[in-house]
Image (cartoon, rainbow, N blue to C red):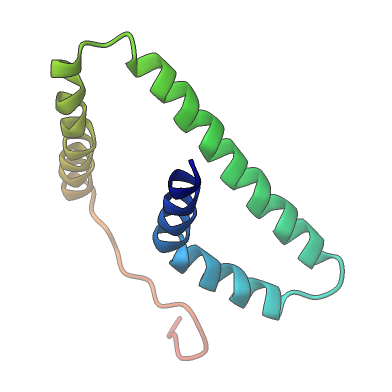
Length: 102
C-alpha cells in the first residue's frame, strides 16, 4: 500500500513538472488577489482532470480488453484530421508588436 502511494506521488510529480514551473512563473508575475485565483484554478483544473480520468476508467471497464488498445488510434486520427483541415485554410502571417509595419 505504501509503495503504491509513493509510486503515485512520484508519477504525478514527474508528469507534471512542467506544469509546476509554469505555475511558479505565473505566481511570480501575479499581483494582489490574482495569486489566490491562480492557485484555485490550478487545483480546480487538476481535480477536474482526475474526475474525468476516473469516469473514463469506470467506463472502460465495460469495454472488452482487446478494444482498449484501439483507443490509442483516436488521438492520431484527430491529429491527422486537424492537419488536413489546417492545410485547407490559407494562413496569413501578421506581425504583432513594436516592430510591426502597418
